[in-house]
Length: 294
Image (cartoon, rainbow, N blue to C red):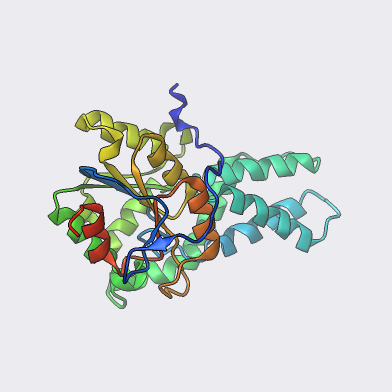
């Protein structure tokens, strides 16, 4: 088995500080990208493009508190919520199964026998799907437009990248069947085609690092031809590991304020991001900058 399925823990490689901005924009330049011939572009999904699952942590943490409380521990609910939120936050960016593996470990620490992590994952997904059912149905029926469930100006960016001949890919830690459904609901299939990858029940059969390795191998290109967008540390680390250019999307998912989420910004700079943006409203300047058109 190729160990590339392993998703590394967060490893800070840079210190978050205030960097300069591309003039007239909210594009923060952590380091200059240099001259590159960008041919392939990889996107994360939730929080990077899609806002359908905004608020997912408000589903995951309470479910985990129930599981931990059922062990018979005498810890107060507030303490269990703190424990769960801490490790969920720590592992955010990895496939959901890793958070459930950790939940099983926490159950074992409290002297109880855990269920299989997949059982916990499916329970979480059932509850999450209940929470977002209204959003999905509103998209399906046309009551809300896809743009309302996308990070602002996503469509404009995707179209600009396609016009420059870039091949677009999507890799998500969310289960692949849900990713495919939501890509269709958001009208994104025409941009990614068959290049949509998501988590599998056999989690060792998928990782973002595997997708990146496949892109480079099948196209016979070097890592510096790869551009990546993500709001999680995993894709930032994976893109940088092969010499690619990483754009951190520190999206304010709930407010869509156009201001970067401070926690995401700090974490993604720490992971090695080259640029930081809150959304894609400066897409014209961003693309011109990356393609050295200024």
